[in-house]
Length: 478
Image (cartoon, rainbow, N blue to C red; front, side):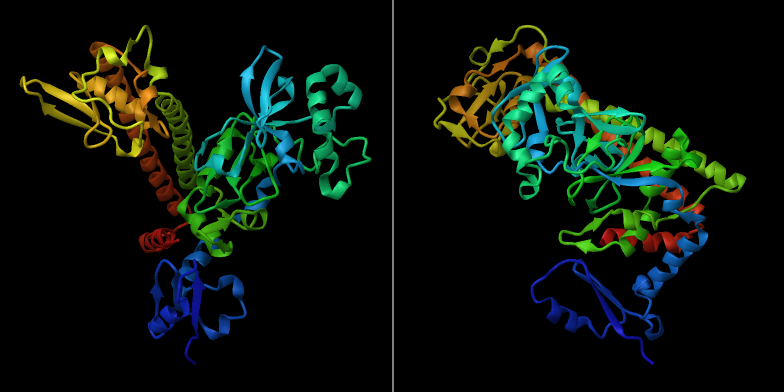
């Protein structure tokens, strides 16, 4: 009996059915919208393995060479905070007043409040959890709890009034919103300022692996110091992973992080997790727990595990340095300037006055040319006709770097921009370009370490070159 044709849809497309019909007679066909393949009639009852036979062979090989499922080495895979009123609890800090007090602005309000710093915890959204890395957006959550003997205890009203009077006044100002949660169920509750759900509140301040709930690739990282909180109840948020007592050392966390970010487990989870619009997959507990885990048993496997741990450690350190550099670059020019600056008009030589009141940063470019005296000038072009000219290329690059970061270039603001002397500009731009080159070097090294980890994990799971080629081809298509 001929094997029936199967179609696995990856993303929507106009006239998708007609496109499938044109290719239905091919034995196998793959594009960015769907996979078309044959599947044995006898195996159709086993929906879990609904995949092309070549993929199924590698999928089963990974399972056979694993020692356990991830749920057997993890103590808990837990969701983030569920406040029921994120617009009240999630804030940005706009000013640090003293060691105790900060000025905050709720995420959906322009009003500012002063509260006690002690109640604030650094907060991540799912998009802040990256592969090997954390990219915080300076968000904080007001956390009116204390951790006592491994449990989260809500501060009483008396404690709030005496120890956190500013935060209590903030809650009173937002009382109507907090009591109105869940169609008014909180209206008559004594603890009306508590989070909507109490689950997992005590778990955050521990070393943990983090993962985006909804992602287009495996994006696991490590919160080594156990400082980050994150939100739950939604695809745009994150999960935390705690390892059990048998696998709770620093090296264990690095080892499992290496496995989780490997191509092997990315292939596996994408075979079992549902695909959403935009080619995103769900990295939920029910799928993470099923991941097949290889534990090092022999001396050779222990050597490979040691290499994985070393490479993961290096990647995390490189990302730490990369974050510092990227932060400094993003704060250009202030992060590169010291001392007095000279006003722009003192070094500006524009042949013509600026004709427009505003300009688009996307049209900026630098042009070098000789003037009528035969001297080379460096023009920052705003339009084909409007420009600002410099004798120094470094000064032109400096102004270019300043203006490129703006949403809109306003003429009057432009004329007040300050540019350092030619000598200082050369020094600043040399340092800036050096940092930019270091960023690219770090990224290349991280990519190389990533590939090394993949190679090591392939070896652990007993996968050959053919298996590797199939996995990497699969991941590229996904």
